[in-house]
Each structure stands twice: as C-alpha cells, then as structure tokens.
Image 1 (tube, rainbow, N blue to C red):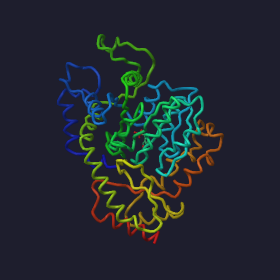
Image 2: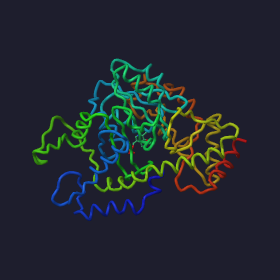
Image 3: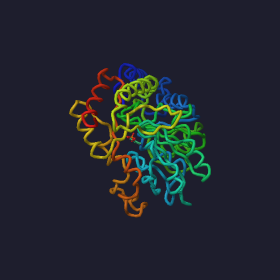
Image 4: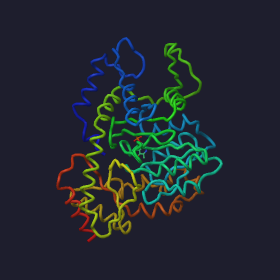
Length: 386
Ligand SMILES: Cc1ncc(COP(=O)(O)O)c(C=O)c1O
C-alpha cells in the first residue's frame, strides 16, 4: 500500500537527474545527448540484483507484465493457463489478451492457489500456472514448483502484491520461470503506473525484451532503425521518468516492508483475541509484505458489518469485503472466455473459494500509522464481534 506514502525528495532528485542529463525520456538511444543517464536500464539492473535473478525487464504496468511473460513463453491460442479464483481481474485479462484459455482454481486457507485443485484442472492443453501472492502472503511455491516440474508447465508468479516478500529465504517472484510485478499507485513500491518482469533464464528474457518493444532485438551492430527482428511484438516499454521514481522507491522497499510488518503486528496483537476472528493461513518461513491484515469472520453479513463499523470509526477495509467482485472470479460473468472455460456457470465454479472469501475482512496497513490505530480498530471490531 504505502509506496505513495513515501514519495518525496529522493524520487524528485532522480527525476531531476534525467533533466540534468538532457531530458531524454526514451529508454533507448540518444547516446550523445544523455551523458550516460539510463534510468530504465539502471532500474532493471538494481531490481534483478535485489531479487537475485539474472534479468529483469521494466514494462508499463503489472497487467502488461503478465502479457509480456506469456508472450515470451510462447503461450497463445489453444493453450490453457491456470490461475486462482482470488486475484485481481488483471491476471485473467493477461491470459485472455494472449488468446489463451483462462482456467481458475480454488484457493486454500492461505487464500492463495490450491495446489490440489490446480492438479485436478491440468489437461493436455495446460501450459502454465500463474500463482498470485495475494495481499503479500506467499503462495505454496515449493509444492507448485514440484507440480509444474512433474507436468512440464511454466510457473509464473504474479507478484503484484508480493514485492519485498520471500518464502524459505528466497524472494517472491524469483521461484518461477518468470515473475511479474506491478508498480501502480496502490502498490508497496510505485512508479505511478509501471511493472517489471523477472526471468530465471536469459533466453526467455531476450524473447520478452524483443516482444515488449515491437520485436526490436537491440542488435548492437546496427542502428535502431535497421534493427534485427525474429518475430512480431507490441509496445510495453517503460519510460525514463517512471524508472527514475522506481530507483528511489526500490531503495526504500526494505524499510517500507519492515514498517508494514511492524504495524500489522501491532494491529494483530490488538485484535487477535476478539472472539470470532479467525487468522488467515500462512506457510512456515513466509516473509510477508504485510500489505494488509486479512482474517475471517462467521459469515458475509458479519464481514459487511465489520466494514460498516470500521468506517463509522473513521477507518477502512482494503478490497474485502467491499471490492469482492473485482477480486473473485466467481463473479466475472463479463469475461466470456472465462465463463466458457468453466462450463458456462461461474457462480458455482469455486464453492471453496466463495466460502472463504465471502466472510473475509482485510484491513489496510500503512507505513505512517498513527499509534492509536490498533486500539481504534479493536474498538470498531469489538462493536460487531463481542
Ligand atoms: C494480482 C494483480 N495482478 C496484476 C495487477 C495489475 O497491475 P497494474 O495495475 O499495474 O496493471 C494487479 C493490480 O492491482 C493485481 O492486484
């Protein structure tokens, strides 16, 4: 959540630096005018290093990152991609834009993809699995890695919410063949709009780099207008000012995540003994980004009453329960591709996910939290649950 809370002089200085070096806003070329200032390039290198992966590619959004990942992996018409029923619409939009078939799986008690249900939904046409670390809590990556290996599927991590998190000491986004990130304005680090794709191998990176840039291979032996190409592509290039902001935000990421974790812990300590609050499942050795604090209550009616009470106390919820329909595939009847993939009946396609999500409440976590917030949250929830 708090990227936008932390924007300040550091970001401004990075942007100013672009203008001090000729104001070149395009990531490529103009070498004589920019005196060595390449912010997108620097941002990609710094991001890859922070995750411990060989390569990263900056793009225009987290949605574009998913589209580029699928393009680079050669996934298209006739292929099926399995993701989870609890995610933002963007994950499924990326699959539909690739002209592949989106299939959603149930979630488990972690509110992330159910590995058992993924296995049930694998067909000979399945090519990839997209696991989403929803609201900053790691998905079951060891089990997914094994499953994908067994069935020869590409594992993609939609790490839009998981930037700065890890599992078993390994960064989220770096487990799969490809990891995607969003830097939109609501994310832990932000560039306003923007995203990143990270790769475990050079060949997939090279295909992605060309594909996100109209097929340009950036062949160093020829000028850009004579550049070589091996296939079609599109334009999802990030521009220099976004990357300048991203460089400053990336440096702040560890302290932002640490503050979120501390603040979430304070809130949890304050509310965890209220009767009727049930914790979200978390895998051992999870290092959560603590983007939100999610818990379950008795039913959907109580979840809505919690939100109402929080609002009345000058507080809020985040996504659940108020934005349920934007984040639960069982309600996405506006996506004919998804409806068709689930036999024409989305409403009854994910009973286990519905049972969990409809009674979930998610509290926003900020970095600059006033010290009395945990007590106020407790009072707001006690008014409903005690
Ligand atoms: C899980 C998930 N994936 C992808 C995206 C898309 O990111 P963007 O808004 O940068 O396109 C979002 C955005 O909220 C998201 O929550």
